[in-house]
Image (tube, rainbow, N blue to C red; front, side):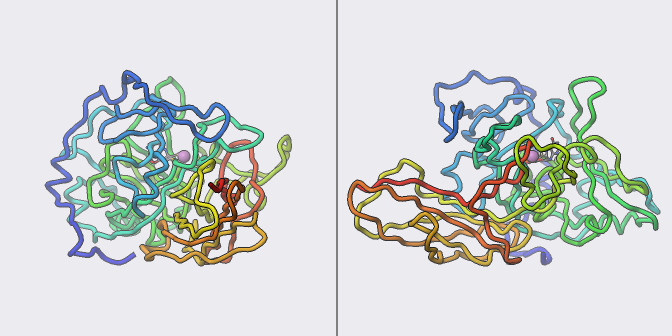
Length: 410
Ligand SMILES: Nc1nc2c(c(=O)[nH]1)N[C@H]1C(S)=C(S)[C@@H](COP(=O)(O)O)O[C@H]1N2
Ligand SMILES: [Mo]
């Protein structure tokens, strides 16, 4: 992550501070439109909605707290996911209806030399600006494909997005506060509240060394604009290479802990079996569980979808996106013979190791009326390849099986 590029579109302090507040109608169920789409699994029918502030047409998974999925065709258009199409996921419906950028303060407290309460203007003025492209992916992205099915949001593949994040290093902020010896974790809280009494507020923690690795950042901008309200205006944590559950939105409170965090969301939720690929057999329960952490590689076809007809006996273009997870993409391959042979795809520009990488390839299709299973797989810079069998766990986390698109020649 380098210092800010002054030639890039700089978000001015005025643009950020002048961000308007949003009306509460944002979170009230909008009259549903007739438009629906079908995610490719049983009970995959979803309404499309354009009723949420700063969002275009999104796949409606739930109204309150909002769960909005990015429509798949978005990923074919650009390596960066536009803010108005970026997926949305909240645990609790008690999201503030407005955030006043002028009175907002980010607090840092706990095991520190100096408690801080900094305004957005202070933060932008005091801390060097950094920029980083990174994929934000929900732990449960693609959960709808789990077999046997598991409870939780039945996402297709669109609970992910790639953005260029701008903000400051968490390390620089923590240095300003002066982390005291004996600190073990740093805990993050957003502005929203649970909607039921006694329900645990959404809090997540990172190990102190991770929090100070110089890569974890606090973002005030996304793709050159202030963060959309539903993506965490005015500040969110960005934890490159890690699942989005740690990317706390509307970040307002940072607590440096001298004891391990015992809160529900860090200790009990978002746990995965401590097995390769978080994979277990359905029904097995006596397995050690650990907090979900680093992402694994994935590759997707974006210009063709299952059931589509393609030209027979000819050259066809295929393209898509891949990401390495917690490191860059080493290679992307395609197969047109059910995985017997693989051919290298050509990679697009490298926008940063934590971001999406576009890829293209050509393949020759068989004669008329034949079926063809087009597969794509990513191998990341650590040598980890996508597996050909799906993983399974009871939470529907970390799916990264090799994707297949079934085509017919005409
Ligand atoms: N404050 C807050 N931050 C949060 C959450 C939340 O419920 N509240 N959900 C987390 C989870 S599980 C996900 S998948 C991402 C979603 O980020 P997005 O809505 O910007 O796409 O936000 C994370 N940060
Ligand atoms: Mo998530």
